[in-house]
Length: 208
Image (cartoon, rainbow, N blue to C red; front, side):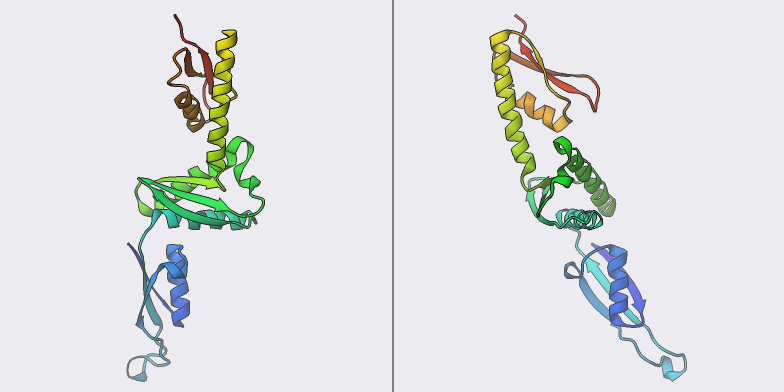
């Protein structure tokens, strides 16, 4: 739990200062008004008394991630919303809205960068590492299905021709999808070659 305590000329001013310090929305916090503002201080001798407020916030990695992503979208002038779910140790944030191609980029490059930054931002706020998976309207699932179909099709071509096939450069997650989808193929072997970001999967016949 994170806590902030601030003063202000009004209760609202103090609350706003607390929210800004914790970088959270008002509907996610508990607000305690410790002191109401007053025009006069003790015995009316020491001028005005400021309002004093304390707010507390339970840290939820998924919500922290969604808040960060929404702020990034605002900076980019992208109209988007974010839905949070949890699967085991993984938090999933799915972004929805019109014209979100700019958040995906070429072969998901921009989406991968956004996911990386989101994980860094959440880890910094929590002082611990968590696993945040960021998606845009199911793009990652569609991409995975596409890669599985591609791997199956190319493996059949390798069986017919006996010639190995080198795929386009992929990130580690996508390379893993190719390897996993063909791991039970009796005649097919897969391996990676090259260095990131140009590391590629090779599909070939097993030796012998």
